[in-house]
Length: 253
Image (cartoon, rainbow, N blue to C red):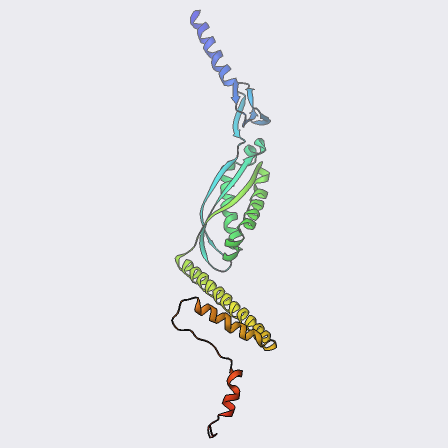
């Protein structure tokens, strides 16, 4: 009699333990009764009918999915390897269990195929320069595929782009040529501006000949400040021009 009572008590504890589930705040229980979906429950204490109800535990936290490097040929026929990361979360636990066999694997596969497809339609320069635009386009397309599964894709980021060695060398040469071109343009612009200033100065001196004498005196002051033993004093040609005309070769002194 006591043995039967102990067995009944043990059986009751087993049934009770199978009927009670405790879910965390970020978890939901998708419950099936005799194979039919009755809905999602939780968090907290969830009571199940033993041997009749079956529960599938689903996490609502954001999942970080690492997309492995994919071989991509861009629109301008450059072969590259691109890796990315996808952030998503389950917003409808029932659909995530019923509509797709494994929503984690399915989201990973759709992310890989979409990554190859979208980047294959872009040129290399666009991929390197307009990363934000491509990220938004990837997020929009992947989210449209996962929405029927109750999965919301919140962000997609292209993480790394591996270029062939030959392409890296070509881009380095292009960057060097671009820098040299800019250097020559800046130097030519400086020469042009200097020529403009000299032309303006020449016009001012032509209108005011006295300015040339002042410039001579300023130059003499600059030379003297260097403590040179030799001092050069410029003599205007107008002062000696009468003498040159008077004492031309063949004229008597």
